Image (cartoon, rainbow, N blue to C red; front, top):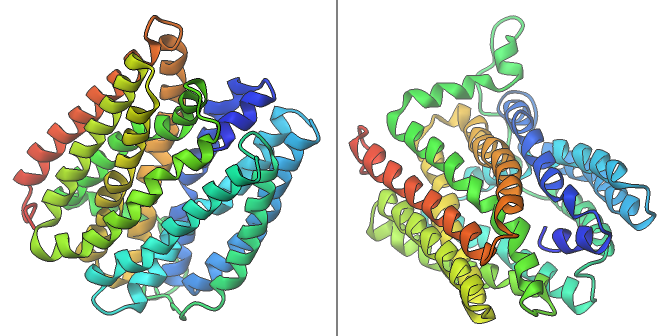
Length: 377
């Protein structure tokens, strides 16, 4: 992801960027719910994740082969769309396996989740070390790692379906995972899910345009620099268990939203001064911002739903964040970038507007979640 903007820019097809980032969220509108329902009622979660990973690896590899062979942007988007359809449920399924397999998940889950952060850092450093910041080879290597991940999935603990089987033929709502929509009846969960959608909109801009700003300001290894956020994410993961033991989930989520406001403020200030260190500092804030909000959110959802619906609940969170929020973010931020970037101090207007949007998310969450029954828990 961090190398993709510069890969497309190097081939003169930067206009594809909003659509390249939108195909994943578009698939995530329904794919996680369908496969989450399968994990709750029909298939073991770890086997489903392994099978999807192996199949998706082929489409992911072909997407970047299409760029390397100059088959055109539409060939790339086609293969990437198929990959996105299959990859969208992956985090939800992996979270289901982890949360079902460990005792004391509130304390231990961040310690398992931190290894995904280590993997992200290794990928970013490797891409820049091999000088693939603008090369499709980064995507081909990712396909190879996806194959390895698929094989490892079959070694994970058996996570059998926890949903109660229905008498007769299951309804279409169950096949499409729409039973999870009942979670919106919980006022606290409803506020959290809607906040997550709004928070994910400006997050798309971080992945899409921070690498471009890094390169414009003279950073020779933007992919490695983007890994700064994952370095601080490790520290945030290790802190999270202690924070949750001492405080309520609500305050951890508010801290995350506050850090999100500060992050975009630093990006805007970097655009104003033309100074890389401010941009690096903003990227570093991404780690605790992401961890305190989205990892805490996964535990919040797991805590508030029945065991038989946990896969679908995690999938619903993935749909709201990666699907609706990611799709709106990719398209709206792509449009907003085009409107503001050619202005004088364009980066200031771009990131400043997103900072105001995140501040609005924080205000909505603080007012809505605190008033909901059990919202302080």
